[in-house]
Amino acid sequence: MISFPALLDYSKEKTRVLIYTSNPSIAKLVVEVLNFSCKEFDFFLEDGLTKNDDNDFVIFETSDIEKASQFKPTIFFISKEINSENIDPALRNITPGGILIYPSELETIVEECPHYFRKLPFQSSVFQKNTDQFVLSTEMGPIPVISRDEHLIKNLEGIKLLCQQFGVMEEEFYEPMMSFE
Image (cartoon, rainbow, N blue to C red; front, side, top):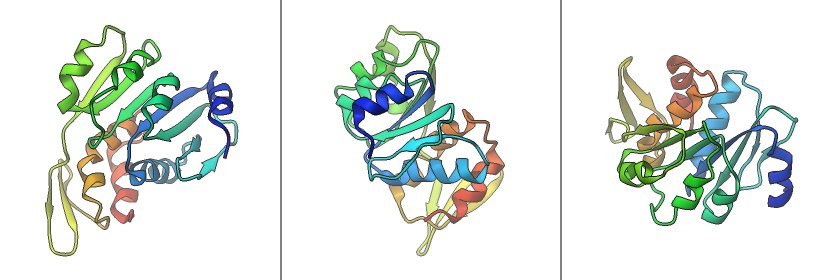
């Protein structure tokens, strides 16, 4: 895997997308949706999965606040399970005019940040848990989901917002998400 300093250097002239999460399924779903929608991007995930084709967008996944603070993202996604302590340095390093997608529970901390960036809060996804699957309640109607990862399901509204920054429409998002394990 590419070293962190080399990753910072590689990505400095690109649109940097940071997925700050301790749940690897979140970044993998983003990659799955973007691939399904034929979007061009590079990625570097914590589990060692990478794609480096010198695209304009580069996605970086981390659960390390030190790395998150140094990455200077253009688009910054924070998942619901992340502890709100110590995220201020990462918020201060969002590129001016960038985008922050965050759980609405972090509203107070986000609003205290004096830097200019677009703020897109999200709520937990509305779903029901049956014995064998989750069923999302959406504007398009109920959508069954194969994944049994409740933390992933709770973050789907935020993940959808993140994918929309790449031009993925709602219907394009749900199709690969329904079969994602």
